[in-house]
Length: 143
Image (tube, rainbow, N blue to C red):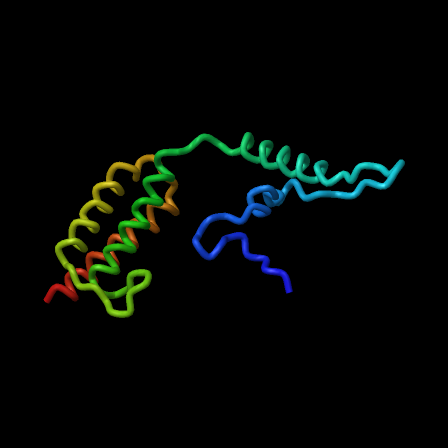
């Protein structure tokens, strides 16, 4: 039985391990038969890259109002977590910090006031509903 470890008992690399670097995943050795065509493995990858680049080029530029709507959703979720109504990721016990919940709610309200003229009616209605739910639950759970 041959010892295939690349390290000597003293921690130094074995000589044959130094001489034979492992091939990289995309540079696997291939056996080419005479007069055989090269495999066209690069073409699907090139097509995939081109499609990704086209999709990225078609994306609209970032919209600050959509970004702020996303941020309000994150802040609202944190408010729910600080009120103990949602569990934070990785926690088994609820967290109660009403001061942080209040700040998160206040910032959501502030952002909503700034973006309401720039978003459609459906998004405005959803944002008002989130704020109402947060405020009602904050009052109920701060007693």
